[in-house]
Amino acid sequence: QSALTQPASVSGSPGQSITISCTGTISDVESYNLISWYQQHPGKAPKLMIYEGSKRPSGVSNRFSGSKSGNTASLTISGLQAEDEADYYCSSYAGIVLFGGGTKVTVL
Amino acid sequence: QLQLQESGPGLVNPSETLSLTCIVSGGSIRNTRYYWGWIRQPPGKGLEWIGSIYDSGSTYYNPSLKSRVTISVDTSKNQFSLKLNSVTAADTAMYYCARHAVWVRGVTITGTWFDPWGQGTLVTVSS
Image (cartoon, rainbow over all chains, first blue to last red; front, top):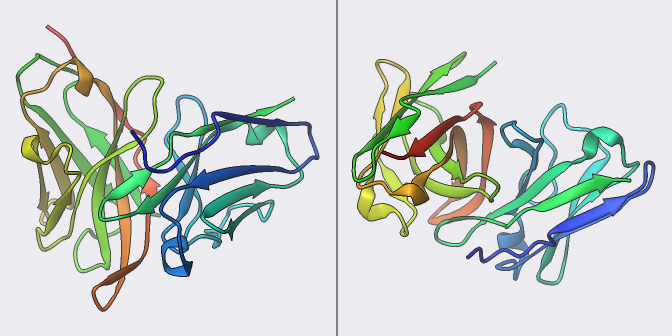
């Protein structure tokens, strides 16, 4: 059982913004910086989208952003596109590496 | 461009040992700030970290698997390996290797993430 909780699914129409939450061991700025987000298309390997809470690797669209509010980290996808339809996982570190249960994003 | 590729048997008998190798190309596995990790994903389920290794051989494992897991590194071949013993059907999964960033300030981990990932290899445990 994951110590990071994500909604099972989130959906939105093209052009809209959606937010995926990740709740768990994120009590302060230091633990927030341990948050990373991954995108996984069906049959493909996960791809790093956000690291250290809000940083984007080179090549990742600026439509993807990471933020924190209280004990919740979030991934926001703005200007939703069909290609964004995928599973998204948050990850953190609390003595061991943890992954959230994953969120399926559907573009309506 | 750094690339990782998993290799190993796709079918393992119950109670036997699962053995996989991750070959790293486009960069050296040695003398970097990075760990090298294994992550698995059962069919239709989420991701589970198995463990990671530094080029010095220093390892750390998921406690839930620690008693059955050994990760080793061969810097001369630029590869690292996973062994999981006493496997059962519950170990059937896609197994991924990845470069594992673990940034440390003093004794505190200040950042950790996996990038890039290998394409993964499906291992089925069945007789």
